[in-house]
Length: 257
Image (cartoon, rainbow, N blue to C red; front, side, top):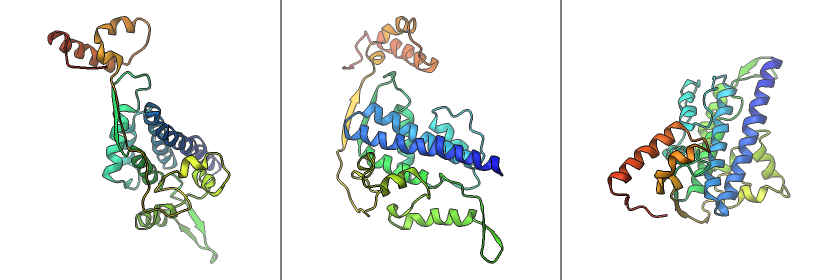
């Protein structure tokens, strides 16, 4: 029993609490126009929330690394369905495409209310980020398993203002409750899902930003770059194929920097 408690504590402190901090950092990055950092920190947050959920439920997940697709596939082994919207799935696909490239190995773009999509994704997935299957001793002396009660509470949360759903002992909840916490303003700024106040609408900047990767613009330098830095095999192969296309088109693919 003690070992189980310690493993759950590891899931909370090493994954959920750190994910909460990644989430706040991602909000700050978006607000200040640091979009590559927003992508990476958002991916880190959702990756850790999913890892925490898998660990709370003792699903082995050693091969995930930073792959959100792998993490979501493993959630199919959970004893419940991870309910989420199509908006969240689309946002996760966006992060899978762009968030894992920290060194501009790939071109990227950001368009639309991505901060609001992050807030929604975090709220939907984080609801499951706690111990759900446990026994509760009742005053009458009986013991009741709370697993279905916890799942029912998560399902009912969709019918209430999202700010009303709270995780006992959660780091985000602690930050929200402390008016003078240095991270509180970054968390609750224009946030429809986390905060003390129930909001129906918010105003936030909608970004449109796109950047071409150096190797997309100049695939001819690939082999020289590989002499000095590491690139994943799939990335290098993709640029080799891209270089062939550019070469066949006479070096003019209509790209711009």
